[in-house]
Image (cartoon, rainbow, N blue to C red; front, side):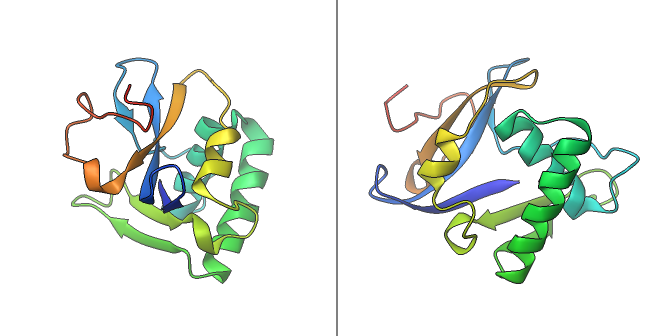
Length: 141
């Protein structure tokens, strides 16, 4: 799930990405469905809370379900996007519309390193070039 919203740090719109432990690439939060996932939206939300907040199991599913309800009620969720929706579904989440998330900076401050993501960072949307290995976050790293 791609989190986006206005950012004071970026002086404009930014996205929040996670850095994969396995490859070092900066990517949106996401992953494969679990048998307990009702649909692709639940998978996307569950993977987000696992990789952003470091939650797992039932706690991740409960947090994902609550976030998904709030996002849908606020019309903050867009998608699915993708060519093969049977394999992978992508969604975007407008953080500014979801009261509990507050801002992209607040989401970044909640990041907890975990088995899949070692870091999270904000990236100005204007700087995205499609190459996850050449991205520079707001600190220039």
